[in-house]
Image (tube, rainbow, N blue to C red):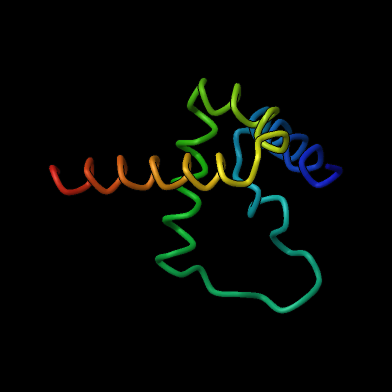
Length: 88
């Protein structure tokens, strides 16, 4: 459960600073990775997630949901995203 609270805190910090989590770790010690197209897509998806009011309501209770419900919700969100992408 601690990871959930840390993730929520990280999201709140990023929301206030209007940055992605990756930005917080730029310049940190360790191997440096190149920005890939996938990483850029993840940053864009995270920014969209941060901007979504419903996402802010879901995050505090996400850790309390049974794994089966989480998997079903992710499958539903993925299907909706795929359907939306196909019509563009």
